[in-house]
Image (cartoon, rainbow, N blue to C red; front, side, top):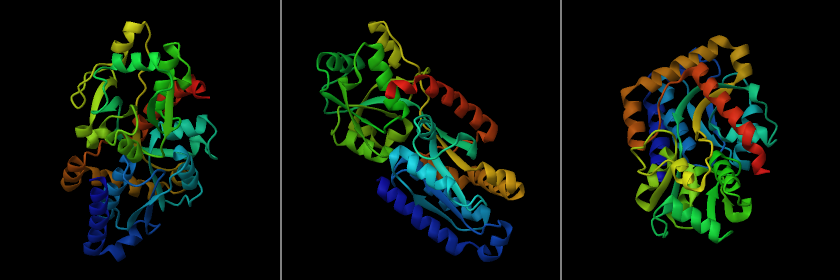
Length: 329
């Protein structure tokens, strides 16, 4: 289903470009003449799906071709570094779950990355974490899974992206429970799509994974806990700290993936008028009825937070990660 959705998005984007009236002359209005969106993970994941939705609909508003380039590796570090190495004239943008991957990359010294070189135009898709097991696993509650881990250290496996918020939340939980990090066998994947494939195929015991991005495997998995304050409509499970209260501990409720549309900070500084053209076109795209219908069908987020609120949310997450990141070392 993910492959087909991505294929339709690519084909739809090509069709939109071929049918767009006046595209060649419209290129003069956006000086770079094109836009390449870098995704630092494999095709099929939530960031990739979001980027391809943008690439399909943004050309009509921006007046230039928009393409997606996947640069996976290093839990996002390779793609984030690649993006910074590209021209800062507005011809490149980045779609990535900045929280947690870019934050984790920087705090762990992965890649040649500096926080202030990124400008976060918009947090388009905010997620939260859920603890999922395959429906063929015997665990019906979070307590059953925790008791199994305590009684059988090293036997339970967890799908992670190394250094992400789900990984961090799990390690902090083990620490609070008085268990070593190797009480769980962590299996690392480079992107949400392969993690979800592993869960849906019962290749791992559990995962602490982005909730909204995992709705595509809802028929194959069972939720045991959510990591958020409010009750949840999508995943019917208790708050993780309600479960941990029986053990006399709690963990920080880390926010999950905030997937952002991002540009170089130097692009904003050097070319403010061109930057504003891109932002205005992107906002118009978010407001289009056909775009809203497309992302609703594809279960993709489409909110407008804007630069200030996005930066505020990300800076708050950065501070939380900085406080707890040492437990991953």
